[in-house]
Length: 362
Ligand code: 5AD
Image (cartoon, rainbow, N blue to C red; front, side, top):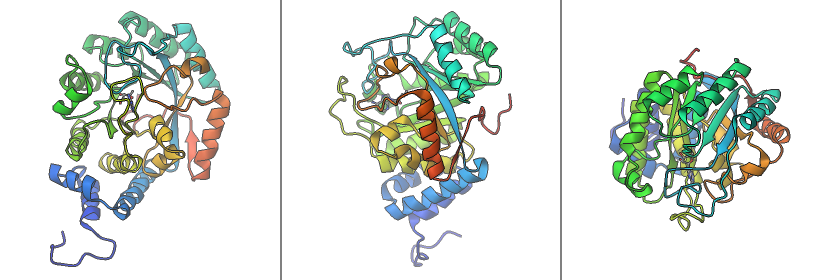
């Protein structure tokens, strides 16, 4: 029974904690309620959401955190997203590409350390034609039949997506960035449209990919209305994975002097997403760890259950800069073990199996 306004709320109960409970019970809230929650929740309310989200993650995944091996294989990009350091318009970015053999070397190194998911991420680089991507995916699929292959290579179109899937790719990450068309238009040049993104996301899901959407917190011009729309989009799309991180400025972009997104708000949104989509695969992102020391661990404690660790060659990693101050971690084995220890310190264990979405068996 909802409390009447005139009744005093029980100690610790507030309008916001009621909304958190309703979100957890129904998987959605009305737009205005989401806005009220995003703008009105106090630190204590957010802590309530965090505890509930951590309990939800615990219920479905125990204290297990899935680890993914990220291979950033090219920073060439045909797109010109105003926030992104590897945008086409950044003439100062030092560009690089890995060929299939180099990518397979990264996989081999990761496999030996226990990684069973490889995430191939790049700018939108036409050098990797559909055939080239199919070749890379096929070779990884043949060499590692027990591993999941995730692609994060942008807008390609249905035919290409189908061929990637048939070649053995399992998952695809494509953040929607913002669910509000007018906001999308302020973050991207004319010619890049939210409708294209959403069309791609629909196609990916239809083909059978475990599909990831997501957005930045604190991107320029963002309002609570936009964030509410982002959560509503996730409630409708029901993606298998959701990537959320704070916006961080990159000095060689038009948004270079914009303030970074708020870390605590990002953590709160992670909790809300966990409560909306209890079984979602939710990474605690590199951007979160960059914005605050210990941020990635706090993301796990707020309901995230995935970490993406970098397997790219060390000399290239320093060039894959979407934002400033990205931590360029050291040697892969050492870094993996350090993350494992930091998870153990907060009561979690790193697991290295494929970590598929619970509703998917392939
Ligand atoms: N700050 C934070 N995240 C960023 N991304 C791109 N540029 C930035 C930035 N400056 C995110 C986008 C993209 C993902 C690969 O990285 O959401 O989808």
